Picture 1 (tube, helix red, strand yellow):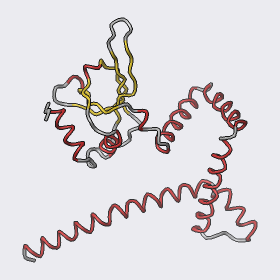
Picture 2 (cartoon, rainbow, N blue to C red; picture 1 turned 180 degrees about the vertical axis):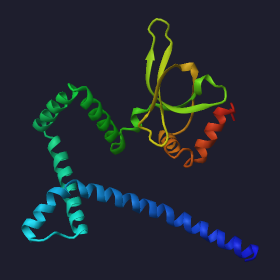
Picture 3 (tube, rainbow, N blue to C red; picture 1 turned 90 degrees about the horizontal axis):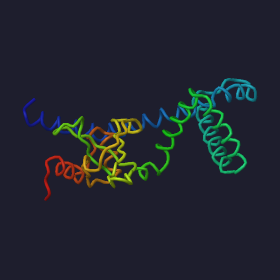
Picture 4 (cartoon, helix red, strand yellow; picture 1 turned 180 degrees about the horizontal axis):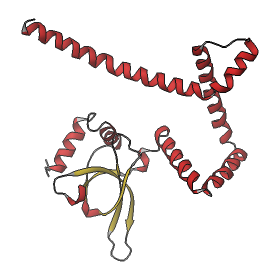
Length: 221
């Protein structure tokens, strides 16, 4: 195979992978989620199928039915929790969990994670994007989000709470309290910063890259 044919072959293979892999991975993730949701109520529906139809249903049919039934249950639950009386009952259940240290940790962490993933409030909790020196290093910096501001009434000094998320799971990380002068503000939209962190730098806009380089190398132009 001459160089031109090899280059052409390599070009089309790479183009095909770029076109197919994201679609294939996305479909795989959708299928995994579909099977997981469908499996939640499957143990309860399978005996009912056998009771009413006298035989074990096909696996796919049972999964599809279970998926639809689970989504319906989630919808009904969501509708019910908007009712004041139901919310009071749930509040009492939460109070019960909060009295048990082990269950409190699991419940609180899970609830915060679900709220972070499925609500649009996650970006609103962050005030702005900043860079923080890693262990006072002059060269290594980490990206974080300002989540709170505290002002000392005596010295008038401002202390900022900075959440430094980890890659690829931005719901875990470190919470730092730093003087305002110790942080480096970066003009990057919060959504772009989250994409940058979750992808480990693979997904990044040109604007975000330029803003980071400006701050890291002290460019002002």
